Length: 585
Image 1 (cartoon, rainbow, N blue to C red):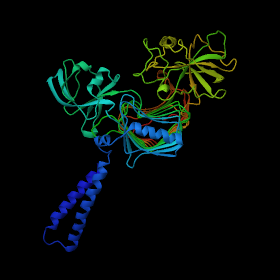
Image 2 (cartoon, rainbow, N blue to C red):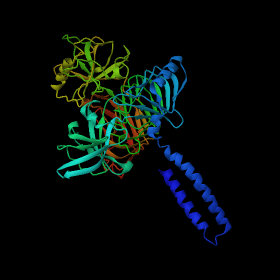
Image 3 (cartoon, rainbow, N blue to C red):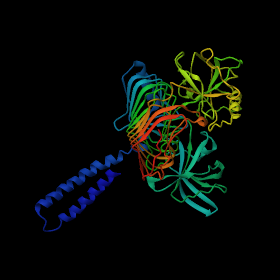
Image 4 (cartoon, rainbow, N blue to C red):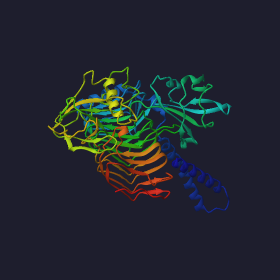
């Protein structure tokens, strides 16, 4: 935009100069200067126009020129099999029918986008970029987008009828999902929002009730009118509505180590946007960007960045994350649940459950679906326990509700066997386990959509003293997979309908970042959450320094360390407008 303004300013100056040149009595030197300005006018026009157009090339042109994704996938698989050190993408690639692009088992490889960025076009409900079981690879200059969008977006072009029963006319924007998605053809719609404002400054004014598909009537292609009974909104002509899906996730790094993502941009996203899970981790995200194309509302349907169950936390540096309908970032592990042994008096065996939060609209434990399909089966079958090191890895266990530690110290894993029999993989079994916790008053925000069940053994006597009457189950962290060493530096965060961030990772730092309104919940959280099964419950040594919080209204309780958090250093942060920031050491 600034380049366009520069171009128009130059044209204005040079046009004025041309008029002056026609005035009598001006010195020859000045006329020469005006001639120079005229030349600059042409040069600036040539310079500014292509640069302004660089704001992500025209979507339709990119789609029309896209190389079929199957061809690129085949060439990439062959390059990985040969052990190539470099792979180049064409300028545009299309993956229709919810097909993924999967980088599987690559080692010591650079995946290079085209100059100006390769656009990878995916489609809902599950298409996306998957990097699985890789190590020491770099991904550069990639733009991720969706056609159709992973959400419905419609502009309000007319409002009629009585004030207490308005009739809205909606017009779908280009590449939007159709309202037919409301009838469940692509899964459940997770949330709907009203967007107000002008142009690219439109932002979510608040959630609105979701209509049923039968409350809409199509009057021409892409144009719908609401039927009687459609819920009213505090809306005006020119506002927009969105109905977003939360299905699979967009840019996923699973069970990998040392992956560098550099100059990777997403312009729309399915569920969680940048998403890493399982394995050693230590991934670097340099100059990543979560944004939206002009005229479109949503950058990410869920968190901009999400990390779960990696041993070494991510580094996010020089990046910009915005326009997301959940947290800017959430870094955590999965809290496992330990149940007592079947044999009374057994002090070295127990059952460990991983209540993985998966893609609930695709597969869900309920009375009609008997399944042990976990999140990991979607992104490569791994989990903290499947990566366990026998005789080395440890569990740290806590009581529900009080968060008090249990046992004399961490439990060293002596053996771990994944149970696959029908009893331990049934929805009834999952419901029975949850009922035990229900008697403790434990409430799960998300429920258990899927799970793993492990038969565990520890050193003889390790479970001595477990009062199973008072503690019929315990929370446990698999200690190695705790995202230790997370670093978020020199980055910008703006536009979210949820939290500033949630960081549950020891030996971590959030330094020299800018957090800017609009933000629905100005909360930077450092605490394990049993309701979400997100830990670890013990968080130590987190450094929050030199960050700027702009326009958040109030800042006294902006940063929230909680139970189990120690050695949290908060210094040099600047609220704007000025206010106190809570200090916790």
